[in-house]
Length: 497
Ligand code: AMP
Image 1: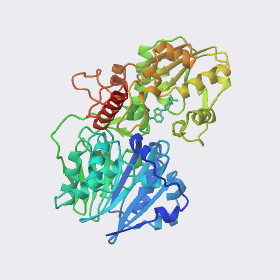
Image 2: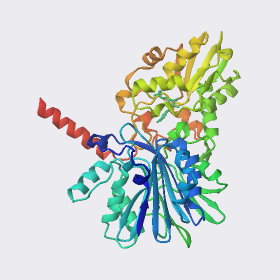
Image 3: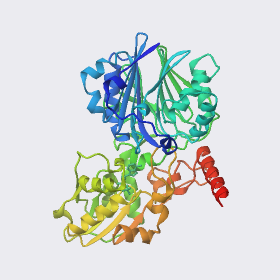
Image 4: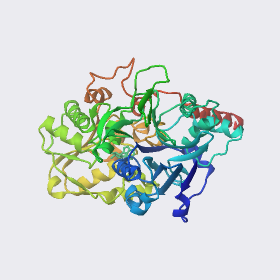
């Protein structure tokens, strides 16, 4: 099997540098998509990736399979920048394809990390796209390198490829399962072989993955909004710990792990997923509105208008307004032609980004007591700017409400919240945060409030229904790489003293 890979030829001048230091700072969030049995698989995949663009705006890639050959295109930038071109899609023939959109922090936007990854195995070609983050990738990588493995990228996903390649099992699916048994952390995977489209979710189902169907053919996607764009029907979620194998003979489900309760990431509801997606059976929009209603029950404030921080705060602000009876108004207008603030690499650039992205709608806020609603505070950059913007536009009071609990712990499963010392809520008390942000009052939705918004009576502390580690520090898997890193730092400190 051969791969025609246009990545480097098409992007001769693109950044493709390697920095050893990047390996241990890898953290990604992404979207995946795959189709099997469609005449124009790559074009459908491009559409699916376009609908998943919110899950990663820095790079995109598609690998297709046609008559004995794999074809790959990987590009930095937005899906529409490259994959809307007929010439690009023509280079991706075949009836099966997988695709990936990727976000990465500074320095990692290099072509060799752009997915799908591809390897020639003795069973044939194997392409792989991953959403999530492994928590033992560094440890596995170190052992593999010791044994002679040659890594092409700094991505934790490549570890999976090496594990599949080294398995002694005969059938590709068995080799894949053997690889999955060795990895820890979060993964929603779509893979393509010369005969099969394979999807897999980690044993806790931390990141989402859904199955769709169109004209009797199957589709895999991170979110249901990617099915809607092509008119496909939502079939079901891939279950936690499930592997689905799609081939000429239909869809086969394999559950190789001991059964356990799912713990999907609650942050999909708060921020990541698109509001028109249905995640784990619940419409994201409805859950976000319910978060706003819960917030209104928990935080009763006398004010004139409820103003969302667009777009992330809009459904929660609607819910708050409906529950409290305080009018909802668009007091901040967002410029849609600027990427997400968060993707800017440095703090100073991020600050400029925030001003570029939002502006106050003076006629709504002047002389008013404003309740401002956003979905989360990470570093606090957005909050400081927006509160000041409200004051500059003449708001007499600014009450800042957040439709999720304070983020006090970093994420290791692919949502790219930063290290603890960069998280405002990890380093400041509530009153210190209020003073830093400059608002008249500041409040967050409670942890139980967020569970109530998803339809549960509250958090079941004995068996939490979601992973909510960002708010509670309750990490649902082992964190092998982190533990080893901490141990190494401690021994360095001991040596120095
Ligand atoms: P910050 O300005 O750093 O406090 O970031 C808060 C803003 O970023 C909020 O408006 C959120 O909607 C958004 N946000 C929250 N989490 C993330 C994330 N992991 N990636 C990108 N944006 C995020």
